[in-house]
Length: 417
Image 1 (tube, rainbow, N blue to C red):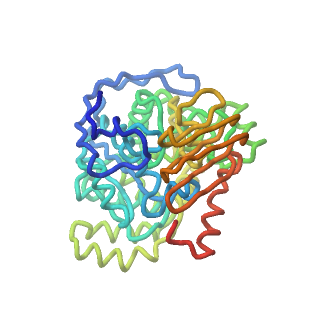
Image 2: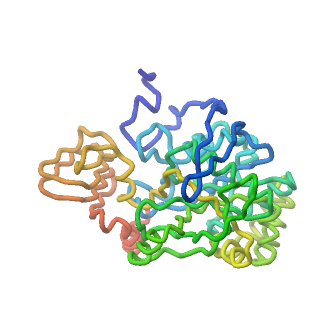
Image 3: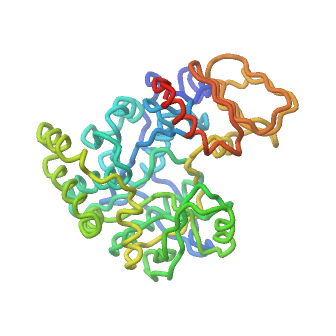
């Protein structure tokens, strides 16, 4: 039985109390290699897990508007324990990657509003490894900032960028895929990890597999044929049928200096701005001056559009096909898939005693207000009951919750966002 104040013992709420978050010791490197690749034929051997010179970058941004009112601007989904495991998505990401690196080589990029909560949840995060961006500028600026600073600290640094708010199952396969991606990065590529699709999803982008790279230290690596935007249902089904496409999970591994080279070639103004910031990063006063002067003018663009797509067209981007389970927990429908329940029963994120159902199939209920929620004869609903807001929709339309967020903002309810 866990101690009374441990996260495992609580398990009733997706919100973690900073006072009860324990100091987590570094896990031993005992993970075994697992088979990867398009047909899971080749095992990538990585018996010694820690990778010298490998730096982890965890972008912790986004408001998680599709998970409103559970996720808010000041407490986004990466700070939540969305599957009641006792660890937030951010903490789980940290735990998952630590076998490959050390706290000294693990960095987080976030906005100033979340810095205090991040430090509370990650007591082992070094203060100089928390990179605060003054405002959201999308993934290229966030990852580029980390790359510029880390390239200055270690010109040979290999970085891996992994979002703070994704869920992954199959840690062995994940660690092996990342370790193989590092080997490909050493060969001079920008590397992404392609997830084997389990369904013709329309909410994810896709990567088309190209020719095998035939690298002796990375048997599963292929060139990226092309990146594809989120498809419609028919196109997604076609992608799945060919077997030549993988989900684009937004994971990138490369030499920090190489990423800056690509940025200089494709987005020179963004490269120059980030480089100037990195030059004075270790001087607090100069850093704040340069951020105030340069950051607002930086282009807001995803890393895929900025460098990955044009570099792929020139054969400079590789993909490691992987077999682990992955979800970006992008809406309440995908969140419900993460929670345990009997077949066709309602999923509950929180205290089960607060939810009563009769002749109800499917759906997800978040009893966050402490009130009793009683449902009769309604199927596949999403009910999120918080102390200050109640949101009801269907699972089928859960991707559209962000429209409600916009309506709330327009109607003057910004304080609830």
